[in-house]
Image (tube, rainbow, N blue to C red; front, top):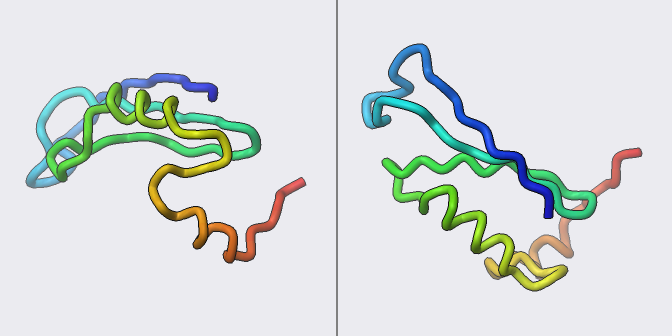
Length: 80
């Protein structure tokens, strides 16, 4: 799994519940899949470091979240 950390500096408050200050996230790549992990602790998300550790510990080929059966049924298309 490839990870690249970033820090965003909002120019203004993002919402009424958003804490002020820097926002951390990380785009990840695993095989052909990509995603962006950008937690919002104000909404109950785990901190970035904890989420990255959980992702790194997942078994190969499994999401670890119980979505595997659903994902197999969806009409995914591989982009060239």
